[in-house]
Amino acid sequence: MKRFIRYIFLSGIMAFALCSNAFGQNVIENEEANLKEFDLYSFKDAGTKIKDSSVLYMHLVGVKWGYAMSSVGFQHTNIHKGIKSPMNAGVYYTYLHSLLGTMPYFGIQTGLATTQVGYVHVTEVEGDANIEEEQIYSAVELPLLSIFRVDLKRVRLMLGVGGYLSYIYDTDLPDGIPSTTKKGSFGLMGQGGLAIKLHPFELHLEASYKYGLTPFLDHEFYSEDQWIYSHSTQLQISAGLHYVVGRKFYNKKKGNK
Image (cartoon, rainbow, N blue to C red):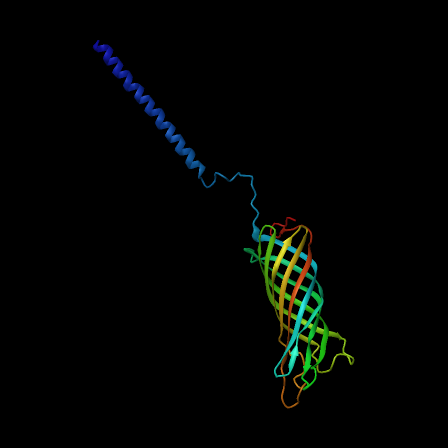
């Protein structure tokens, strides 16, 4: 009987040892599998290719039409009014790019546009209606803007700042463009809006403001003894249709179009 009990006791010890060894081996294998899961080289053979958005570029060409409110500010007390004009249109080129290959939030825009600038001169007459004389000129403009952009799924938000060159080439005044009117000018320009992505077209809705840095009229327009300073301003609301040239994006670094 004692031998039987001793045999059962020894068999139990051996079975417990074997189970412990198997359990410990399983734990070690699981730990090794987990460590392999987080190994730096465990995903080196993964087939998924990640596209770096910092090397994406885009070219757009399009047309734009706008409704403008223009005026000229003068350094005296004479009354002047602004003018409103729907005759504002142009052809534009936009290049969206990354900055130093790391920040894909930038771009530039330029183009060639025609617009109307000028003012309404008001002469006060006592006891009678005021006399208003329109001074409206047609001008061609060359803007150059630096653009900051944020691309969403179907919309792109844009904010631009820069300058422009302008040249007056025509007017409806009976005697043509007066010699006292400065034909060439330049100024500062700001622009903001959004682009609705329609693929391969984009609809741009924007508002811009221009401030002339050069005098609109000659300093001696009113008096040879006292110079008068003037500058032009324009607020424009516009809509444009732009076409994405080629594919939507291309990778400049790798040369994959």
